[in-house]
Amino acid sequence: MDAVLLGLAYITLFLTYLGLGLGYLPGYRMNRAAIALTGAALLIVVGVLDLERAWGALDPNTLAFLFGVMVLNAHLGYAGFFQLVLNRLVHLARTPLGLLVWLTFATGVLSALFLNDTIAILFTPLVLEMTRQLRLPPVPYLLALAGATNLGSVATLTGNPQNILVGSFSGISFLDFAAALTPVALAGLLLQVVLLYALYPAVRSTRALPPLPEMRFRLNRGLLFKGAWVTLALLVAFLLDYPLAQAALVAAGILLWSRRLRSERFFLRVDWELLVLFAGLFMVTEAVKLLGLLEPLQPLAAAPWGLLWVTAGLSNLISNVPAVLLLHPLIPQGDTQGWLLLAAASTLAGNLTLLGSVANLIVAEAARREGYRLSFLEHLRFGLPITLSTLLLAYFWVYR
Image (cartoon, rainbow, N blue to C red; front, side):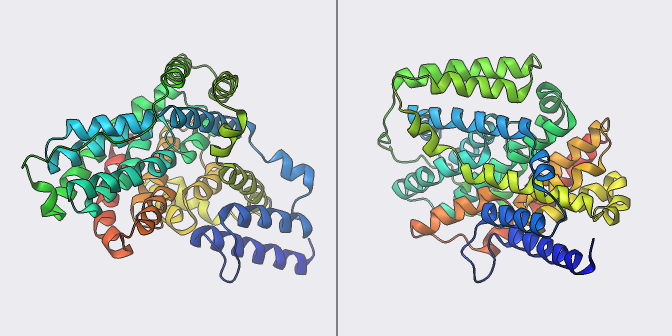
């Protein structure tokens, strides 16, 4: 390749990953999806990729799986399932400490079954309303929500986008993945409760909470019944080792076949930006591989300890999904422990800073709109110890 074009390719990649890390490019009104797709387009212009090679870089299994899970989440959201769960949770929690424990574990379990970003989007305004009515400080409960969405999602392939990628690339079954990493998720959730208990005196109280009126929401029993049996059937298919993407796509088709909801309403809740982000990242990563830019990382990622810290570092520099896409070619196909460590480290590292995961940003931005501030330093005070402790836990558990 011509030296000038090669230089332009390097500049394009630098700006692309800078934008992915920051979430924007200074002076431009572009989000991560736009940055990834624009970066891929420029790499085609300078000749690193052609359209056929770029198109071939897309992984249909990942995209189909992600789309299917999004349709399921949209259906359950319209049915009122998530609001129903939080409503029941409030009435089970009798004290501020009980509320912290129930919120942490309920959020963690839901994030394991459904995409963690979905849980963050739906639960943040409900948690803010709940703490306002109970006259509780919102920050520790917001941290519990953000942390648990990351920690709980470690447990399964459906928990977050980077796990979906790992499942697609590695071929690890849903059951094997869950059996390996569920203990890490549960231990992490317990550690979170202990840490928030130590950091925030207000959540230690065991005084009885005042009665809270029922949260007002629309529950559609017909949609809830259909969503419940489709979810159950999908989980059974996963456990029976039916192809993940195929199962998720069939489930989406069944849910879209509806007389109650117009198709447009499903598609309104599908995160098209995330799908575009994945498509752009697949193309950009293909260019990185073609240019041989992964070679310097190979010695670092060859050892488990190096893989742990490289994954955690990259996940905070350029975000966890781009980090997994960059690092996955360095892991041998049969190295199950390496794949599990890549999934766990990229997810757990998201708790380090407020910018470490999309779920953190969703919670912080929703809180800001409601007049509450979750600052970078406030989050770091919680994020640093929980991240270091859970990364070490994951490493020693996977390589026990």
